[in-house]
Amino acid sequence: MIVRIIFVVLCAVGILTAQAQAQVFLEQAKVSLDVSPGEHHDGFLLVHNTSSDPINIRAYWEDFEYKPPYDGAKSFLPAGTAPGSASQWVTFSPQTFLIPAFGQQKIDYTLTVPSQIQEGHYGVLFFERSVAGKLNDEAVNLVTRIGCLFFIEPSNKLKKADLQNIILKGNDVTARFVNQGNVILIPRTTYYVMEDGGLVLLRGETKKLYVPPGASARVKIPISEQLKQGHYTLVINSDLEEGDVVIKEIALTVDASGQITIENSQD
Image 1 (spheres, rainbow, N blue to C red):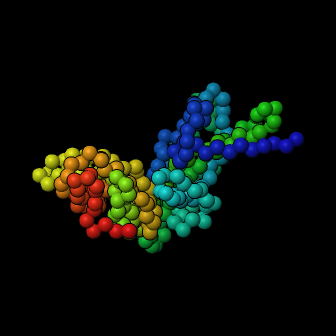
Image 2 (image 1 turned 30 degrees about the vertical axis):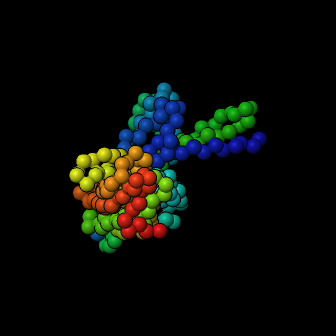
């Protein structure tokens, strides 16, 4: 008999289905640690079984990377293969366990930082369940997993970015958010347009980005076609969290025909 394997990634690092959510629940979706060289850190995660049946779980580590266009989508890689892998720094126990009906399991982890850390290191601790069943009279093995993301970054991390290549495409102002630091940046970017007198006419927020060090992502800001002839200032504010921000002011001009131009625009 041929058994087909159906693999589904769930929960903190992917998409939750109602069925999986009703059976396995992970309290913590993300562990963020600012660390120093040689530091040790102990912690734990709690996995809950919300069903009336016992569940067998396997725990294991994988690396992950955010992938273009850096909107939050991830690639998962074998442990130790990503450039910023933290797989050698984190140990955890138990690695296999049975959660009784309506029970929970504590998973202890230990982080050991080497003598040098110069950039962010990342990974995901997965908890996987495998269930045999049938689909259209065909034997299948449904594998589902939930995961907790680990962000391990130096306490003296460099959070630096710039908005470059600012141009106008139709009625959209676009810019390239460039991560010039040594950790993943997840900016919250807001904007507003004000006229010469300081009155704010338009404001909004762009989609969240997840940009690795050395990478860049496109920011798009819609500009209303209803701006009257005159001069305006577009202010873009990218909040990098923990008090770090990137602010860019852009001069706009609207002519009598409604055409918008940007001063010192770049291709």
